[in-house]
Image (cartoon, rainbow, N blue to C red):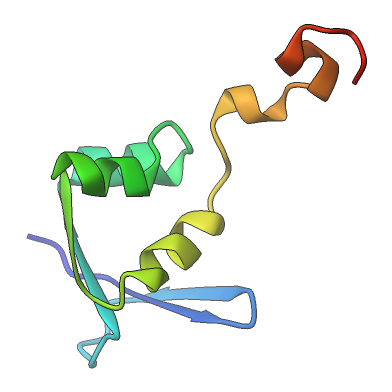
Length: 87
């Protein structure tokens, strides 16, 4: 099992191996974490499926997810996403 500490301060993320108190702890398989970080999996959906566990402040999971890119489909222009051509 690997241990990483991610600190989020005013939109700035810092990662270390420090052994400090955390406001939230996320327990997740490495492969799933890689998919969350790359934007291929939504962290909240993984939580609801039971694929990851959060101990502590659940709101920090949302903040954590926001620092990573969204899914590839989120980059499409609005007109293409709706299919109506109005944009």
